[in-house]
Image (cartoon, rainbow, N blue to C red; front, side):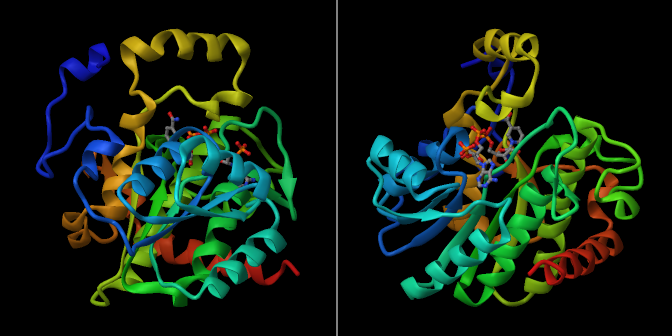
Length: 306
Ligand SMILES: NC(=O)c1ccc[n+]([C@@H]2O[C@H](COP(=O)([O-])OP(=O)(O)OC[C@H]3O[C@@H](n4cnc5c(N)ncnc54)[C@H](OP(=O)(O)O)[C@@H]3O)[C@@H](O)[C@H]2O)c1
């Protein structure tokens, strides 16, 4: 347990900062359940793959390439079907949608975990800034394409971040999604994570009264490969601080496992979670007009990509 963990208790769900992925699904029987997970090849995704599979779930483990998904499956010993889903490539995401549909089994949850953070200088995909594209648009194509495959009480879990606080004051740079006027690695990461949160809010609103749910979460701060775009000094500082001040990877994966698989989590919809409990987001993260505008703009962007 980290020093910070010493001062953290459990919340109303019975879990908290120190809970691990395995703990939140402990003794659950997930056999017969099917979960689609993006970013299975590293960090929180690999932990999620292992924890849910250990309880008997069948995982559709998506990574940028089939080979990388297969390697993660081999490392974790998971019961899983590998899938190639490169979120920077709409054709790859659409192929994943078709591949999942062709499996013909309803999905109990889609866990949108993959992400990139703080790319040092601007990169664009189809004219859109890369973090927004990979973290938000790629997942938008995936989830929207698979809504018919989601079971009657299926869940969508968006791995957002407290970094959504770093998005601009007005939320989303609709007039500069290509980051031609300005680019800040963290501001754009924050914007993409705010988009993950707003997407969950809007999808949750659409799911209201259906039995399905969509929620977003902040996993905590954990040393993973996510820091690959950070400076070597910042990466070293994080690695040193990790054992004392940060969550470990099993703790980091707990909130997404809770939202995806715990029976009690079915009562939450359109919520934002941290440490396995409902949490406060930034006020703009509750702006349903902004959420609706983001949805409409995302549809336009996707429609414009052949
Ligand atoms: N770690 C933290 O402190 C923290 C805090 C807040 C939020 N989060 C969020 O947690 C999620 C998981 O992050 P992590 O910490 O586990 O980081 P990680 O170890 O870097 O894992 C990220 C995963 O996303 C995949 N990915 C990256 N680009 C992709 C693309 N274009 N298409 C498909 N997959 C792609 C990576 O695949 P490759 O291995 O092939 O690159 C990897 O499997 C992210 O959404 C992140 O924003 C993490």
